[in-house]
View 1 (cartoon, rainbow, N blue to C red):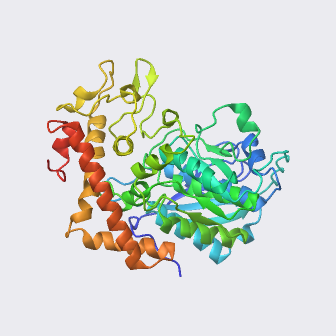
View 2: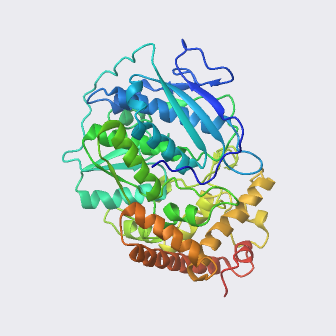
View 3: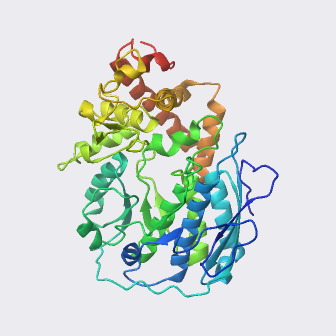
Length: 460
């Protein structure tokens, strides 16, 4: 049965997007996303993915993922409400495979659930067959058992260190961004899945929410699993990162399911319908706080180098000090990072962040003296960063929100195929441990700090 997204788009004509070859005329009123121009497949990246064998279904899946990212960028969400409606036409090699009900409906439902938008897809045959990416002599780790996505994040680095210990070298790493653990181009060229295999070009980025990014990352890790003959994919996020955005949505936004099991289960069903290949996303740190994950990783004989990681949501232009990029230190992601490092007993240089201290009573006074880019938007990020963690902490003992927490627990249990009562118990335990970490972090900033002023859940 097809499930419609929880947030319905307004009753108006959908946005038309044609992700087609240059030789195909777009539909009247459609925005063209030309394959090879706006949806640019990276040759080195394709070689990195198709080093073992060529599969046009997986190539077309990359095109579909790029088309989705294009849609997500070019049309801004409405001023009132959240949802948009898209009617997307895509050129593929085997349209008869993509129009099968379980494939097309699965794609539309997965994206609707992830983004809160309404999606409709149609598929037409390509005019020209894509040339096979030349196969390369790239080797997988011996005894590969697990796909391990990695990026610049704390969770990514910590979980990689932990899984390396338990899997005894059987990890196949997949890069999820331009940065990451290995930045050297020569190293990238010698490893499979070391480059994201496509990028999207748009004249403007009208919509900043980027909810469709979760589909991009799920797709490239699933393809890597299929190419590696590995069926398990690690989701590295700890409990606050995976469940927090669903428990505490931003404003009136649709809940953020990008790394929630309810989304990855939908990806699994869709991917198997398209390819016949079963993959499974696993969540080894789902019931741990980020601080607990960092503490365990820091105790390893070869502890990770945390200075190599980045958590901040802000662009380089917004968070540079004296020409050098930092992390802002006050957005929700940075605030969670700082709290977790504090909980794990780990120290960072004050110059890691634009906001070198959180102990000032006035928000802007905590920033580096050389910082010249104060804006009202950054002020709002600072308030929102505190409030997100504070609201999440308040859920642990709130009778008012108990029903909401139980609903998320049931949804999570269904996705994990686990007992609902057990998952609910684990979720409340996670929230209580988060609340205690948050309380200690806020108190460490001092009673006169702006953090303490905003954190209503914390009492001395």
